[in-house]
Length: 127
Image (tube, rainbow, N blue to C red; front, top):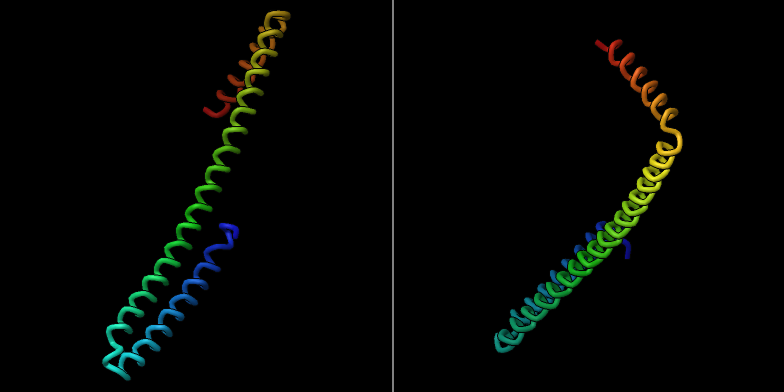
């Protein structure tokens, strides 16, 4: 069951379970009213039915939480992998830039000066 389709199906499942519990309680209540001797057993069965229904609901919520936790873990792993890839690309770019500066220092200085002039011109226009 996908986490994204889970809320609608969970609501439907919860409604179905609540209707089942209501039906069980109604049936057990009618039986208990018919015979007072069976009342203690009926009360026990009502308690058992409610406990079983609540246990089932709790298990479903735990399953949803487990699915969400797994998806969050997968998302975190993906983010870490993309971060590592970006770090590697940044390091590669820095190494390439360092080599270029070492091999062509005057060209690098001219490019930096040109970029500085363009930035200064753009900032002067804004003022």
